[in-house]
Image 1 (tube, chains in turn green, brown):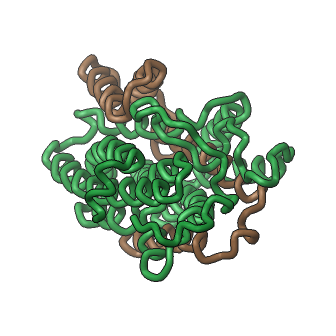
Image 2 (image 1 turned 45 degrees about the vertical axis):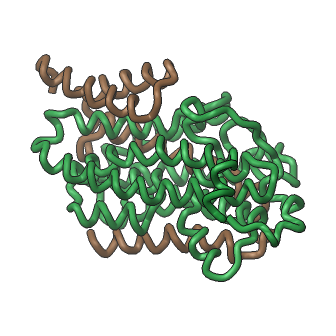
Length: 271
Length: 101
């Protein structure tokens, strides 16, 4: 029954294409993680248990820069805060119950949230979320393992430019969020704060300095966000941004995420 | 490292789960969403420059700057993520072949 429904579901198709596109670059995470100095199994634990691309890259980014475990953990945890906001929106949209709620939480990431909130039909939201979330989880872990094995076999990571690949990966994660002057200004201010801090504090800490700066900007930023749509001002500062939109089928976005008024009467629908 | 790795994994899951378990009105205020948004941008910008220009506690100009420029050009041309990453690797590896540290 699930298979038949999924075949005709546009949301499932979008979810599947996002899963393939996202899963593939798990190979870059795997290779960069072993290049940063983590072991194969430490790399796999990040993909299996932590499972949030930005936070995983943050963790190995701090380790590669010579930072301590606690600094890596802090950067990872701070970058994961937006997943809490996604969880809240998805809980209002999908209303998962019992064990499904715990499974849904694990696959709550940028891509699955974007797939679900891009749909207007409650059944489609569920199908999109689960296909994207579970599809990415499986492919991301398979490709992480492939990348970790490949990275180990490559020898000196610098010779292959893997440290350059890490720089490119972070810029690629940042890029889709820079859509207006304000997010660009925040990025520049935080980049400058980081560079100023590097000579004065231990490795890894400059990233946390930038986090404090960014957090203060967010806290004191003038409130021009409508109360009914938290964060949805469309300038790239909303946490549930569609990542890497250019390689995915264009689709309309609905601002209903988080309001919960679309969920009434969908109890009969199952993914 | 294992200890902090597992703490990071536990915190990541608990953060996600918190969104599902806490009543919406507790977290659904604009300020919380804004902070999550600015934190994400600030951390990614910081991670980009640290990985491009920091070596321990000093700033250096090496082949990684070439990777940053190459990635920027690839993104400007709307290349897919994997191509962007490969462009960064190729630029850094190529510049080192040419003798830049």
